[in-house]
Image (tube, rainbow, N blue to C red):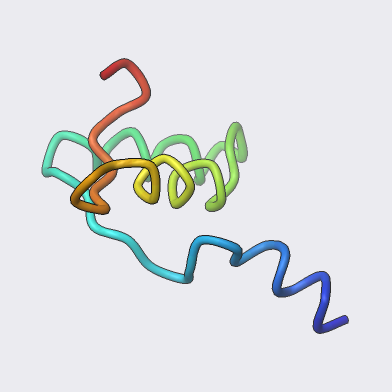
Length: 56
């Protein structure tokens, strides 16, 4: 439903990342360890809207 879709894209359908973040995103999405929202919400928390890592 539209409500389900809206919940999965709460932080948008795209975000920026630093070069070192690409591998983490790719590997975890490929293995289904994490979903897109985990990365996009982390980027949303950053003052510049960029996913950097989960350890910073």
